[in-house]
Length: 371
Image 1 (cartoon, one colour):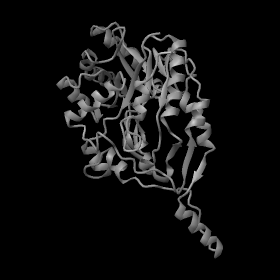
Image 2 (image 1 turned 90 degrees about the horizontal axis):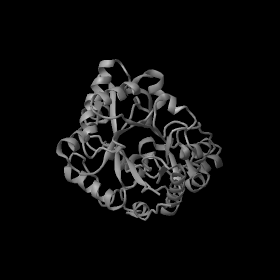
Image 3 (image 1 turned 180 degrees about the vertical axis):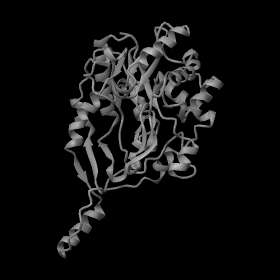
Image 4 (image 1 turned 90 degrees about the vertical axis):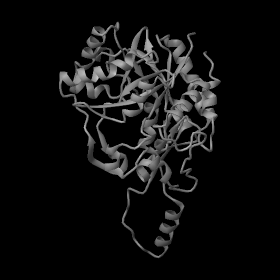
């Protein structure tokens, strides 16, 4: 069997930008929510504190080098940098990728996931506040987008499949609905600039049953984890804090009626059950399994957050084994195993070491066997 190539989604949010200063306050980064997170019920492990890398600033080149070396040491093949192009040349959080390109460091494989999604205040309780709208305005903007990407595609570190630069698209349905020719035009531009083609992958956001081949995709990141998870989110157990529980009891004893507060709840599901039910299936194009180490987005969303409980390296290993078996059966061109994520700290969705788990999840990747 071909060697499995684990690719980890990578969030470039860990440095201030003017837009975040305006929206959330001076100096805001992903660490702002991580650091102020609170335990919302008895036994809730928050805040989650970073381990060896600390509360880093991605503007520091040594941090990026350290991340890459750590990933390499533990068997991660490359990073999938989130890339934000909203239309009319509007970008956000592009500084890190630009510096990686200009400096040639770290010498570590990477590709882009175009996060073609409108930014709203949803995770911060501001559902209707539009921060940056995703649009596909014109052929000129598409060409500007491609011209921005081209130096990255040409970089020797950029991940390619049979010489074709890999480009992941986060929301394939939004792109297909609003700009159905976008992919074919990107491919044409790639060929005009010396590439045989692009290798375009739909992300795990959408279900696997859509016709991705017809939409122009070469590959699909499996939706299997979400598919197994969704029924439990819809029927999940709701937890309140111990203090709130006893306050409710006292009020009940004294006959004090209180108004319901639907906001003060946390939805929790058992990851081990979800993993047992997770089943990878072919999506009609080359399909790459996605596995998830952990999840707790209450640092962003408070009581509106969702938590996966009973995370452990052993449960993560079960996902790795399932993914490896699926890849053996599929015999895809690239043999990618998608890891979500390297550093989504405000989602509790991390492979970087924290103070509790250390390198234990990374150790499972390092010890992964090609089945």
